[in-house]
Length: 332
Ligand SMILES: Nc1ncnc2c1ncn2[C@@H]1O[C@H](COP(=O)(O)OP(=O)(O)O)[C@@H](O)[C@H]1O
Ligand SMILES: [Mg+2]
Image (cartoon, rainbow, N blue to C red; front, side, top):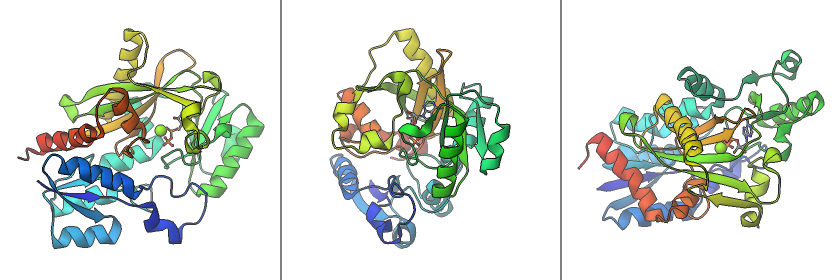
């Protein structure tokens, strides 16, 4: 097949970057694009690089590929991850990963929580805060967690995102509102073990590949926040252990997988998603967020580490996504 890769590189935005120091965190590096390209070539596909934004638009108008492999995060709004799939839909170009609706809903963490909650998936109680004044009438139970409403890649998430009292809450929410210029999601803190779950497929054919447990090596689980501070550090492998599949009781794992699969289906994810699940104070697993456009950096992104843990190759990861798309779209 002729496959075009849609992506946004950190360097595409460096010149205009302003604001928080993690503002470019979700964008990709050339090694990821190379990794995907090699993986696709290894199966005999012809690969072109489409880039993102206007460059992507010009490229697909000029010479549309048979399939777009989409990892473009987009830019500038809570609908940014919907930009490339929306263009593909308009031009009738088949593409991997979810459609624009799912991309936009999943990026707004409160929207996603409302959708999965109605489908019966447990998720921590929450509030969306648009101004610090609203904190006075909050009726959630401490400890709480605060994060920007529509960011990914741990943006705005730090050790102090876990909040023990009203004073800390005022301070943390104030800082987030000031730096990210978007509402803040405040939710009840889940102090149990943390998992991220890979799901492949679409609708009735969707199934869990495996959960991966993210284990802090130096901090108690109850205080753990899977944050940028930890993952960005040079020695992140000494701070974090990634266990796929987790060494846990089968019934417990099934409950975690059910949260992920039900969320994937409720949100209408296609081909692949990575769903974050954490065990709450009541011992039950809770939906934290869904990533229909999960990071796929070789040897680094959670999804790549999960595949590694299962003894599967990066090539297999990339081509599993393509195979799901081909089957869903009935492409040859
Ligand atoms: N309600 C919560 N309770 C406990 N930990 C949380 C909660 N929400 C987020 N976290 C922690 O913060 C991390 C990042 O949050 P997440 O919503 O997944 O944001 P991102 O989009 O940056 O991955 C999670 O992996 C988890 O460790
Ligand atoms: Mg996450």
